[in-house]
Length: 257
Image: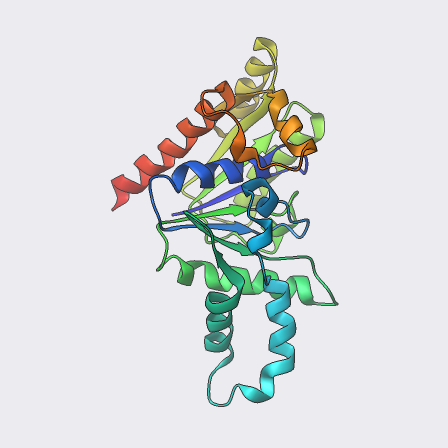
């Protein structure tokens, strides 16, 4: 199962991707977290930044320098081998793959194409792949996550956050990206009026409302201290609701096996 977490930058998609990885990896040891955002924050949110030694962008640089050494091995075999041996880092309960920041002309497009091509192959080795997507809309046009099964669109109550969520739904239809479901998650929702606004927005735009997450000041406190969001108290309302989201996908996965 491939789950892509998307939305406008700053709405909390990385936090949700990190916590989904945290909870799902407690039930399965075959989980891969993918940081597909060039502004990489997922390793920090998971508390494993020091384990990342090479990114997809850096694999591209090695590829450019090693073409003469490939011999009879084709490009796809070589790249796949490098990704498995160097770019995927093994954490305690999950693996992590980071796209990284582009370093030269064409690098980001190459890394996107590489990620798109390798996702389904990676599925042979994992029960769950959780993608922290690039913020905004461009990755839909590039079809980077066209292989995803489920999309989670994260929005806060900002006008831009809601507009991005609406456009993601529209783009998915225009580009004929046949996801099994596009879910909406409202984040940092502070009152009943805001909850009703999110519910109405989801209904009007054909998005399935998955959960409404409250504002939790401890998230900002952890961030200021440079600590991972996974240190949020498990009995907090925020963590309980994210665990419900994780359990939803675990149940879906069991049904299709």
